Image (cartoon, rainbow, N blue to C red; front, side):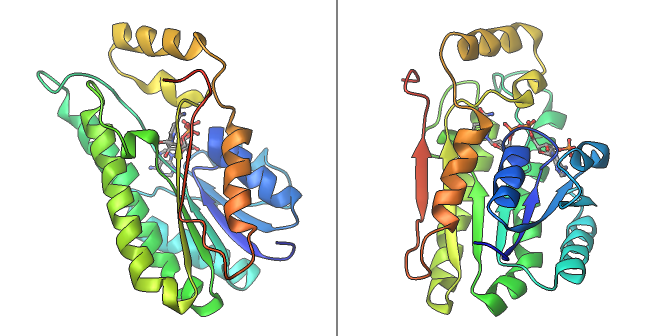
Length: 236
Ligand code: NDP
């Protein structure tokens, strides 16, 4: 992977930050995007920090253009930016639904659309950070799950379109990972419940998910790892 060029979205914390670090350690040139650019700068001087709001189509295009201009192309893209809220459908604050759809689903589509010409040009790899919630539906996770099921459907469709052109398409589906995302659950009672559930087991660390990403992208060109589902051993 040494010398390859990667773009990681949502790299200012959690899984994205761990993935950007792991790629940089493996000798990959990394462009890291998020809204909190100050946090991206903590990834180290080698990493190109890019202001990026994936809900904004133009921002996605601009960040991709800046990465390509700086490094000269793109070989690996990790669509990781995401938000999570939980709660029952009845009485939900629908603004939270819109935020999840705009970030997790539309954001992934915008970034994918912007990077695809570059990945096709260099037979690159695109990695979507989906979720176990994209494979199994659960109560209180309806809209988050809808975005991740959507990402998985889009990803498989994309795979069928581009795989014979040499572009590898990967979906990574983690279970519970200890990150800042849990704090976003809007309902305080539900947030406590989720936090307790996370504390009740040895969860995955962001680095565990980063290792799965590196496994997938580090395979020889003829090997396409399409899907990795990983959970903490303690998660049923
Ligand atoms: P974090 O909250 O730690 O990280 C989320 C990242 O997404 C941040 O860097 C944030 O950066 C970025 N982000 C959010 N909104 C936007 C936006 N509009 N534009 C650009 N970047 C944005 O959470 P995780 O590391 O846990 O989440 C990363 C991914 O992993 C998400 O897609 C999540 O759904 C998925 N996932 C997480 C699991 C978990 O248990 N933690 C389990 C399965 C999947 P900033 O705010 O600076 O823009």
